[in-house]
Image (cartoon, rainbow, N blue to C red; front, side):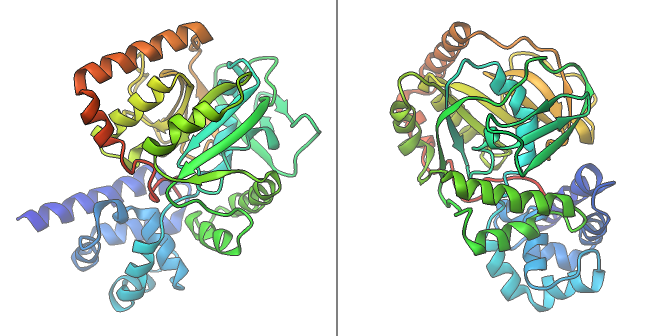
Length: 371
């Protein structure tokens, strides 16, 4: 009975992926997801993997890595049955580390609310593509355009503003210092990085592959620094290392979903106790927020962009459409007071030893984005 429960959960995961992420965006992945969800033999293969390795975009990327034709049922069955040894090895060795740079279009208005210069620290940074929001150009559907201080970027990120108004003076953030943390850092200049990140993008999304190539070049040129390590061992040290005149900002996107609820609480406590401002871009319910969000949840509002746990915008996972909520972010002194109180409350509730135990290995190789 237990194995059937596992199969049902995996099937539901793939149906949700088909309905909320692939439908209208990737016909080939929608077809694969629905076929897999209804096939006992294929589900049984996936059930042999650890739960974090069962995610659709990782499995589908591994299949494509080994030559499977997206959307083709026979190719899907061949990869998961006949070539399972090779495909499963890739699944276990690799992880979803896309960190879609287009999310920076949603994060830019949040960073605009923070007094600069900024010292930016990203959790689960992968290749550092979200560590360089100041190196991209942006074109919003309301006519707002933003360029780096030195002029238009080779990477232009469009974003549809479904509702709300952007700040009239929206500009590229002044980032004086930046660093990332990941248990498996990726070299943006490495050929293997591009070779693996490309199949993590839906087959139909050629524009995202072009953007990925350009973002990797910019990250390589910027020389982004990504430390190998976990949150417990590196976050406090990096915040302390940030220049004294800069405002430390901790950023993460589509990262906390890969942590258990307890580990998410521990990570949140570590961020709040660090004294840094907190910019998050996660799915509904992943980060505790200061107020309720509008319902219902739709594909274009699956993710929440928040500053210091105050929701600012809803967006899709790729960041190419957003709904501004009109939230009034906290001022710097208000934010620091709130973060300090939250950190103290969490430590009292959990106990210092319990908190430290949960901080081990939070920024692991599974951190990344959706396809």
